[in-house]
Length: 130
Length: 140
Image (cartoon, rainbow over all chains, first blue to last red; front, side, top):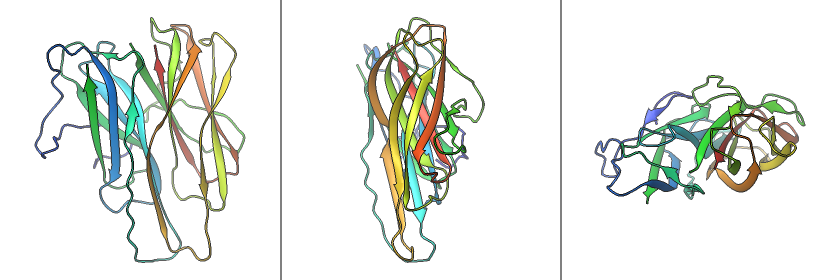
């Protein structure tokens, strides 16, 4: 996510690095029944905090919707030190109680962050379709 | 069917003071949430909180979301949505990196479709900088 704060960018890269595009809904699938999101800082982060949001559009029967999904917070002390830190985080998991009804069109995923630009975060989104 | 709506706000106010969450993800001001047609309850509250900048150390704050407005079939309600604390020992030369998923609370708050819902956020404890609160409500 190289965009500025409060700006949505489309999430369309495949796990193999290719441009997979929007998600084509498989035949017979009527609902999004689970959403998983993971966010990591993919470069030296900036001292700040940011909340992350995904926007789903195109394929939803009730129209586009935004969901808060993640936070990152990076802080430094006043001095300078050489250090290494590993941050392993679990994914955000959301199960819509009533499901999110699909309309047969491709699902477009966008992502944004609010707060202050934290650097270059990387986001992964998984949708479970039933 | 579950329908999600989101609001944010930069919490520049003092401790123990509510501020209304009116900001959209794009930085615009979409205003208060109007309960979508056909929806009768809030089924999920999804929350994310960070400090937008450097954290004041050796203090902590707990955050509360208040729901009010004509959309609520019962009285206004306050819901805890998490806390943030910072600490420092000696001369600080280290760093801290946290990334964590938003919190999902399953609730059953009855609402009226087409009516207005007001979201306010506050924190208790001590002012730790400029927190940023993001809230998504799931309607069924």
